[in-house]
Image (cartoon, rainbow, N blue to C red; front, side, top):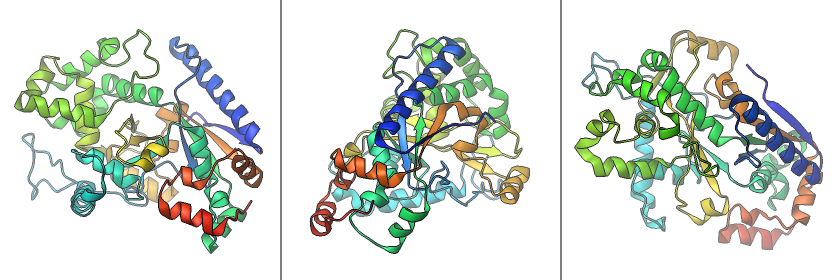
Length: 383
């Protein structure tokens, strides 16, 4: 596994210098790999108040989910069960949050993936992991124990014992890995069980078409550096809804982007992706854009990665338990290690102070009345 590049910073100025180094590093890697020449890469950021915190969604932490037994469960036309414990957990959460919180959502979310976005941003457990398009927002999250005006034992412990960090993701490069996996590794898709569904679809033909027509189905080859490669599942859900029963025919005839179709089936519908061999190269998470369904998500400039419905079993599960390392973590997946960099904040007190002096406040992260009241009443910081 290629080691993920790490930077150490002790001041706010050094943090921004590190961002420049990160951008240059991504630029050089891209130019060496495929001739891409990005002056400024579109990057996403995620702040952790503890550097040992892995890049894995809350729904997966410490849990391995099983697939239904084919002898007893309702199965697909291919005779394969497409329902898992994880699907059940997602369904319950979707039903309950929609039933109890619909009146609190200013917009009108239509699809389950949209409700997952809302749930994720209010600390619910999902297959999503939230990122921000703002490095400053991610840094504020990393330093939240220092800029939070409240005080309790948990915050006190974090201030004195933890090293915060900011992860940096190249979302286009990540989605290119997802696309290339689908195009080049059809054998692994079969092995993982995904290609056992939708027998009307000729999966080998689909994967070959993706391989031969990357400029048609993915990157365009004509610029659009700010938008190419990043998709919105809820927008693609509209395409599927409009096509209705004609969807599979449209995919077979390549009238519907096959990459979009696979993204829907694997990530939105959460077909199980089986991992039995610990050395298996697994399908990575995908980088997604969602509509801003709340002022909080808008303020945080939220973006997301969504993980496949990993079903870890056999030798892979035994290895994870024995080594206490989860092969589903983004930072443990060798295939996408070059999509990630990380900045460690080795003097968080100083960086938090400089961040506050530059005008940043916790109310920028959580723009609600309770946060403003906390700041007004306490007016104390802990750096």
